[in-house]
Length: 268
Image (tube, rainbow, N blue to C red):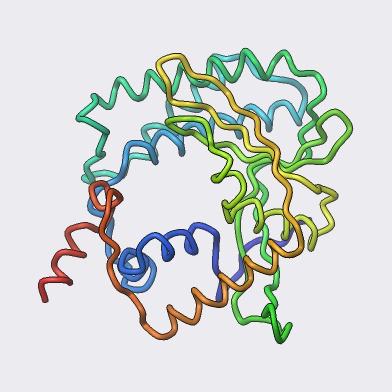
């Protein structure tokens, strides 16, 4: 059984990425607990698609692939649930939210048509939470914080044990994204610590094009990359402890969930 999140100090890949993208947003969200002012439509879509894919692989693990209609029903419920009440959902270029929902359904149709043709996939764990100890990369002392996360899928694929992570994206992942993303490093570190038998991670990326496509990209990580992850974790935790919460301005500000609170903080 995989250890799940317990009370205590922890850090997730999502928190690390938030701090690296904008320390001010990290402070507002995780330190001050400011309520979100808006939610990006891409996040709503990704959450609903994830729920639908989890339902597909759970059914496949427990007996057989579900029909497309069942997967779309889960998507529909998750689509509504992912939209917080009284919080506006921002779409790109004022695209109608209903059009994005229909795109999500087309994405799942493409996924289902491809997935049901595959015969060598056997799900082992779906939406599996984990919590592992972290060690300082130099002193090797155990950190107070544990690394936590949820693995989308652990599966035997054509005789190999793999971690599979589902993503929705406007375009295919680039080589740099695949090589430098922190998530595979963190999840493969967790897989090794928990003896899951997985030595690689496969991204299953469904593109948000007019005609959706699926990109399968397998990545591996070295012990040096794992060490670099620990260096990053320690650096971020030290910066948080020191109260280094400066704003980073850029494209991400437009859909930032705490943009107004950030502006108020900057104006004093």
